[in-house]
Length: 93
Image (cartoon, rainbow, N blue to C red; front, side, top):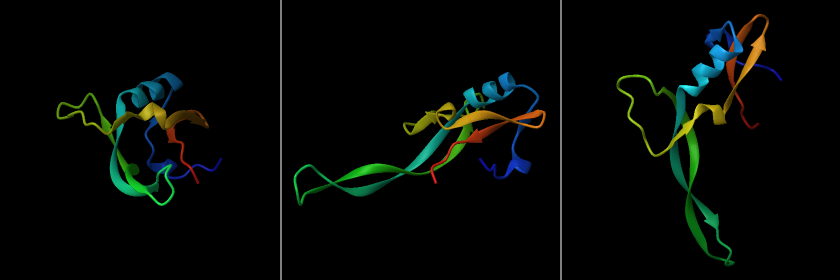
């Protein structure tokens, strides 16, 4: 798997440090409403779809929880490259 933007990634000396960093963060998504087909032919409804996300640290003093927050651990995992660990986002291509 090719890794992108590794030069800007936060790096850790252990897998546990990386897991702790991931567990202290959430992804806050922007949602957009998209038209979807219902079970009834010819009828449509609107459903929210994740459009983009931003990572927030839950331990920051100014952090305020939102309804679209999801744990970063749902989308990232620790990966070792050389002797350093990084939190790598899993994305669909």
